[in-house]
Length: 579
Image 1 (tube, rainbow, N blue to C red):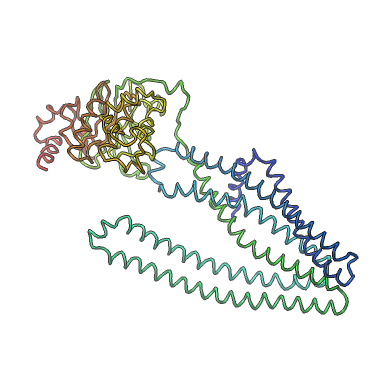
Image 2 (image 1 turned 90 degrees about the vertical axis):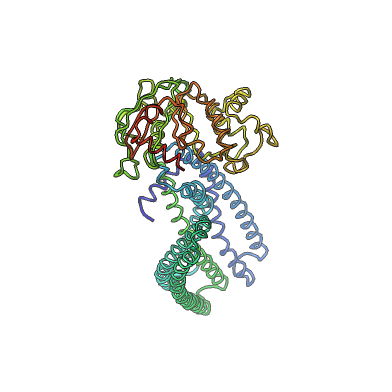
């Protein structure tokens, strides 16, 4: 457990600070729980001596005291658990909210380099691990330490000689146990690593089963999996060897130590240096201490994991979020939609050596339609992302004569709607998905938006109309229906600028026709950037920007560009007509 990691872990204290009084009271009950646990062996020994009349108390008196100890321990344990869990639940709920709030405000460049599964794991698994540690492990560690320290002190009050004899033997056993434990941990980690690799192959194979079968690669995948499993067996067998030695060592040393301590204790009883009750007390304290020491190893491992998880969670807070403005006055700015780009250059943060856009220039006026065409990888979607303010770039993009950086991200994006190629609907109702564009929209605005998007009729035909659940990622609806809901979501926002990122390329002919009708209505009076896949849909646009390898090759209307028979646009048009 590193000092830096512990320092980071203590930063979580701010989330439980509002509940520090409950935490303090819970800690008091924790101390009382430990105290009653230590008192138990003492009174059990007195019970044994009471049978022989050597304790000064009757059996019934000691029995009542033990009953009271058990009742007190039960009550103290209840309040200790309830208060710690209460503090942890509320504090970590606040942590979860803050992590998600920070995460969702991070720039798109951050998500380009992260796996969704890993981010999800930080909010769910890592915080759950921290939660378990706060509610159980940390309190249990303190409790076990109280029992160990208090138990050893109590042992000295029973018999100094016997305690020193035991302490001379047990630490040696513990040192050897730690050495064996580290070796076992090393092989366990190697085995887990190989198992994780095997799971990756399994997951890839299941997700890509169509590709596997299409390329008849079943044997190839099996051989990959088999090679990993052979390594798993190899490290597992080495681990088993160490575990076998460890078990033999533990049996011999632990039981040997117990025999030695009991033998010496029997001599002391025989010589009259301790009573039989004190021997019983000593054995019980020893069992308590041994169990606590044994339990600490697992608890410590849990805490180390939690500290590691804390580092992972707090790493999110190290990332700089976007400067999103939430003031209502800022959000109400309405842009006209005049767009001008000058010498725009861009490389993705994860691939700084590859320049995607190389000096892009164009200008369109309010209400005009600009089609952006080019071969795959020419930078079409990237340019649209820059207009949305998803990435930092070199050069200048202005809207209504003001750079998008000066406008600010919130007012900028409030004035832009995007209809992507792959529509994502959230797992709610049709109504909720459309109102995602403008939660404050009225019922009349909702209906008008769906009519504009050519979606009203099919929505009314659904079993529950606007309240129909769309299913996970909208899979209960067809591609064309999902796309028209996405258009309605864009329309209800009433944007000044509309971005259509190959919005019809994944649809069949019939769905494309219905969606295109909707798009034509939506684009009226709005500045529109159309990333084109099928050139048949862009003949009526005002301007066409032709990109090739991140550069502007041609710029003009359809009629102007087809005049150049050797131009890039003409070649792309011919290729599509041939296909």
